[in-house]
Length: 535
Image 1 (cartoon, helix red, strand yellow):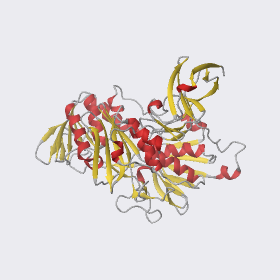
Image 2 (tube, one colour):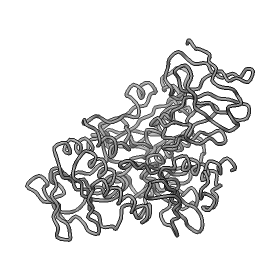
Image 3 (spheres, one colour):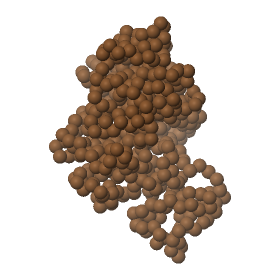
Image 4 (cartoon, rainbow, N blue to C red):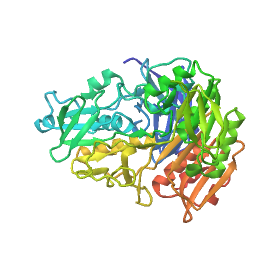
């Protein structure tokens, strides 16, 4: 490959432990200096293209400021999702105090990690060739596990069963960018069909699993087809909760979980004017934001006093309420939808207060429950409360069986208490660790949870996990959408939410990972990345 060697900067311009973005020869380059070593990498995260220079660098790890993907500063290798590829690394030399980089004439800024060859390659050991690993579920956890199995060297037969018609896709966009689009498009696939074929990953779509016999290690799916497995990952995600009221089967009453749901909602929205959202969870509020930006009249109905009170607390919830109201969203709080009315198609939402709301379109967003109906609790333990799958620190549910994502109840990263968390990035983290352990390694899951939401012009990041707290300490301005909110339990920071403080959140995620979270008072007016540098 033809390259050109260009000077980028003097070595003195780069401080130790610092990264900077430079523009040279019509190319953007990220330089990282650790000690006397300088590395040159692609500048943008392979997830949504965030500028990595605005993230944090610590102990050889670069953390993306938007969604906390993590890369090796030495090689560009992705260490934590949701990035899709490694960062391209450029050759670097330092001569007479000047940093030179060799730039290829053309090429992608991101590269697919090396993967094991498929089972029919001549150099694969016979034992590998005879093994079959099966992944049930084509969401974030399942797709991440399939790729990681190939990356860690598993070269046997690898089958992914997904109940959907589409290949694995980015579900996080459905309630956000997808519903704000002008056209009804197909899903944003995580990988192409060619990718799965090249790496020997058999993806079977429309393949709902109806029975699991853990004793004989056999699955039944689709129209009665069966599969014998050596190791199994259960990653079926959640199924949407239906609203058990009259009229729930009327036309134009929707829930949102799949790309088909999103396509139907957007298509209906394009010929509608009035929408009623039932629920103030993240799906409901993101859909409210998206459809309001499409010009629809939006009314949100929920029994609580403010959105997200159980997750983010009353103060942060009030901020979201005020912001939505400022954009014209109407709220009917402290009440419930009693019935949907209409002749074949919804025209009215009747509330338990007696009020009736006109509606051309209704979206119900009242949460999900684990999709584990096919699991026999006599063979694999299910949690009595929500039918989730309890797993140990290695994400193992039973001999040869692992669980990841929304269905997994796993040890909390701090307390060790069992928790179930419905986050996209965490599902990908689960999938990657489950893959390591399916392949014979013993790696405990210790990742710090993280999620994000985008509503109107507000981007909120949340790191850690707190189902209950003694106090919420807010630093900064909720009104200006620039703040950090600390969720405290027994004087310990369990989680932090923030807006307009992306670098701080990235640094806090690393402090939590290292078990070195300072006292909340230390954050007041101080850059969290500076604290991380001292950790």
